[in-house]
Image 1 (cartoon, rainbow, N blue to C red):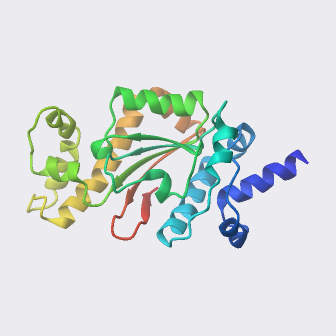
Image 2: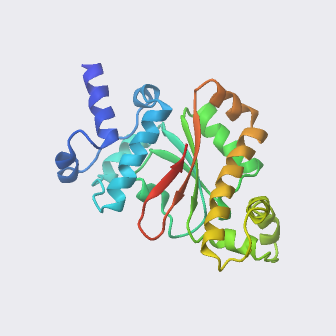
Image 3: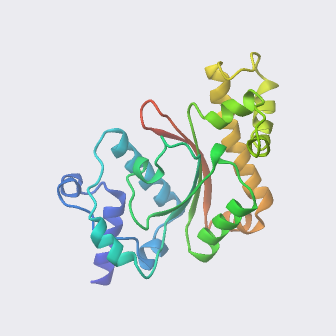
Length: 234
């Protein structure tokens, strides 16, 4: 019976085995310790791809938040840690068709890492059992554009300095370094995601070791504001 229940919840987590049912009935389950343990990093990533497709098509799962609040009060077992930009147009749980207890979300302009973000990621994976780390950039990112234009303003200056390596990297390969150059902005956005992943591996021995042992997977992605889709770098 326990195995059947776990398989049923696993199936629901993927939101693919009975799409009609999930559209008609509100989701009440939350990720349990057993489900978190049973999922692999690849399964979690595959599920998020399915869920993002549902979001982009306007077929999101109905959720009974009241039931989830009660069930998650005393524990949480998120499947992933997602580092996103601060941008208000990138509601992380929504674009992946998620709800209470599914993922940890860290948000900072330009989806960069610092010791506090890295510590949060280490907590999510090493302490709380999350198996996937996603660095999520997005199109038309204001922080990226500001870094390209060398904006100087208060504490924003220090934050943008963490994006400048991506700007410099792309500048070496492309001309017309300007935030008005859409192709340049796109390439810097992609490069910034990849460099952030490099910084995670470089500055967090804990996460690097977990990845090397296949306990977690670290991937990058970019959310497209014009169509609601996320494309991943794997």
